[in-house]
Length: 117
Image (cartoon, rainbow, N blue to C red; front, side):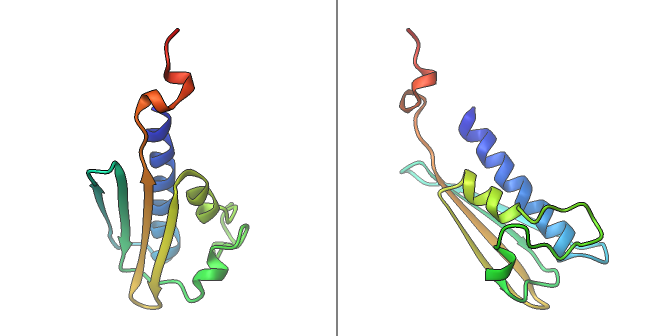
């Protein structure tokens, strides 16, 4: 359940970023693709065809946001990185952004809190 919550939080942040920053004028689509590999590695791609990110490294800096008028904290990528094993971002201005989230899932017995006495 803890791993599911981690993935849900990271995906939610990525989708929110796509909607808020990719389509500042409204409208648009966000596509998700998820694959679970045999080695229990989960890969989730969140793709938009919005305005793209001009400077990906700057956008990944904590507290940076392009939505100054909203109450945005600028912590979306930081949140994603804290819950996933890796986060990669590919973006082209005017063409959109793809965020790839990767997490190696562990069996419940790997978590001490899941073990029963």
